[in-house]
Image (cartoon, rainbow, N blue to C red; front, side, top):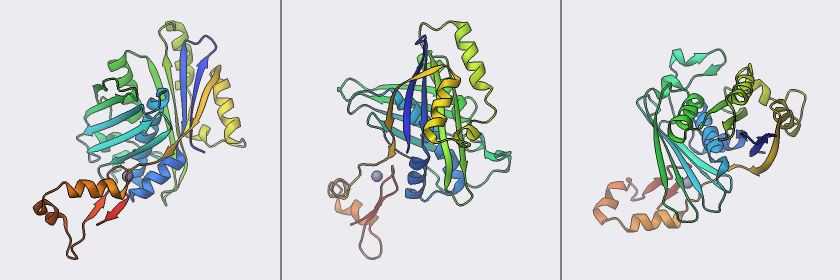
Length: 282
Ligand SMILES: [Zn+2]
């Protein structure tokens, strides 16, 4: 089951989030009919979005994380809500393999992302003004650039690890991530000790594979490893609220001329939801 876990060190000086996202990645990739390269990049972005959205609290709170980049991925958007729903897309669902992106058994994000910027927008369910922040893409590696964003935009020291293993047929075996963030009271020593330990994990993907353990046991072992205690857990799922009626309304608001431009040879209009890939025909 996909979920996000919030945890704290006993000193309450370092906060952690763990996200398990395999089923959401699977649903999103299937909806958008992604090939495996696009799915690998999308999987990391989705996991990063779920981790960053881990502290959304009030009903209606949401976070939109987007990449505008020079690489062939061009644009990636991930939206997460306080109720654990996530949806999103990558502009190109059929990214072509770039040879230099193969690193051992994984696909690096950098060749597909390149340069550009990351925007994080937080919307409050309590109708407060949305908050937008932008940071530069420093490396093109999703986990690294999220840590740069947290540092540059929010002055939060953090480290983040995302693991994924996707079979050649596109079926994700595991996908998830962990984010540690220093709270204002944390000392440099405390941060260094925990972050060094976190960064010395040889393979986060292997860890997520729960070797001989249940998923719950793996999560408990992960928290114990960093001396953390769970604060809350909530389920995560890929879900989009698009529907035929609202897309129909949008089409109705167009002029006849505009609508005719979208009609196919049979006089139908085919609309695809950008966020989940669902097709509608009118
Ligand atoms: Zn949709």
